[in-house]
Length: 194
Image (tube, rainbow, N blue to C red):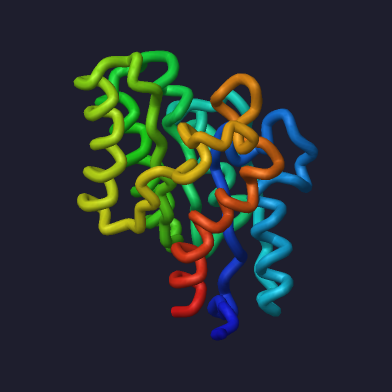
């Protein structure tokens, strides 16, 4: 197995997300971002993971916080895990697309690669809205040539095994967190090995 190696100038991985990445309802060390730090250490990679995720955050909130985070941390890779709260609040997908696009542009201008973690929302929001919501992530990935994990909770949310989700049906349990990392890891590993 190849050991991920970042350029000497790299400052690590910045994660800008919402409750999914902030380990809502769990101890912070149970979350997938803490597990990512552990896996990087196990791989012998001396890479700092800066988790700037805030429960309840929207793409507008992430966009407002991003410039300072980029300046403060100078990351090599920015992982954007936002949009779920925009969808749950029924915000227009065009607004979400503008905010996420601006975040990608700012990250790229700062010299960082971007990994976009897509989200899906419950079907009760209607076919037209849910499809438009999901399409935002695909469109941004294509336009800016950034990596996209289409659904960060793939194999976790909406599965027969309800033990992977908390009682609210929105947030993964501690048992679901390693599966999030398993979903994300191949994308991160590929970029770190360049």
